[in-house]
Amino acid sequence: LWSAGTVITPYSVGTGNMSLLLGARTLVGASESVVIPSVQRLLSNWIPPDKKGLAVGIVFCGFQFGTIMAYLLSPQVIDYFEDWRAIFYIYGAAGLVFLVPWLALAEDSPSTAVVDVSSKEDNNAVIIQDNNDEEINNFLTTNDDSTFLLKKTFEEAKQIWLSAPWEDFKQSRGVRAMFFAHAANNWGLYNNLSWTPTFYSEQYGLNVKESAFLLIVPSVAGAIGGLSSGTLADFVIKKLGNGSTASDADITTVRRAFQGLALLGPAVCLAVLASNIPEEPWIAQSLFAAALFLQSFNAAGYGAANQEKAGPKWTGLLYSITSLPSVAVGTFGNYLTGRILDATQQNWSYVFSLNAFVYTLGGLAFIALYDSKKEFE
Image 1: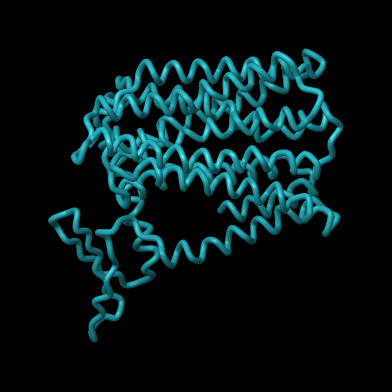
Image 2: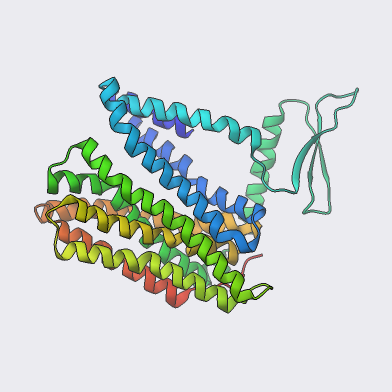
């Protein structure tokens, strides 16, 4: 679906059909929205508690790697084909290529397997076994196995939705903490992805290729920050456990510390940038790199906290609960940035000051509200 939406985008622009364009971009966004909740569920099933931070850091590092490759390749693709549409066609095709190993290798959990028990009487018989449940479900499919599995997945999702502890989610201080941190992160992240190239262009007169080069270093810093923070947080939690499982109070302290750095650190960087826009682009790049390095400490903050608050059954849904309003907050931040620039004759100091303020609010809220005690089994 993501590949389809990506490929349709340039076609919709060519037709001038705004409804088709919005539909294509909606398809892209809707397809992307399931990625992190699904990853959270997979990590909860596959990764032991003392490796959560590193696992989330690796996933976040993958996001940064994709951003880096886009910054490196996109200008080259445009130059080579002399057409910006080529980017969408190539990236859409790449999505289909990555889909092949995913379908071939991915499993929901180590305890889940699909075993063929074909007999002479019916070659379509399959058994789906989950060692987490005492009951073994046998299903007989007479048509297409993929349709059967899709139906089963839909029924499981429906059951989870109907039985979810919605009232407990709403009243949980930990869920609120993760929402505030997630929303502040999205505000800054969306602004960074959408407006930083414009900042380089307007402030320093750089073209697309030159701006892309300056954007690579902060993304590399972000990848390093995610991996290092996840590894360090896991190490600290293991040491605090002293050979056993660390207490909820100790884990809470670690999550608060790393999430505080992930939001208050970038707030300081952007406040410095807002106070005096540097004349040299490399100075601004250094501040952006420091901000993104620290922001990637989210991997050891709310990124890992989600799996501590909920068991495997609820971890994907819990992430979605904080993600949906956070996406709305980040999108509004993008819109507001444009309005501020229009109203202030492109005064970037106002934009960076506001971003620093939002980061600060999110960081302080997480520190004040979060605790790691598991609430949703």
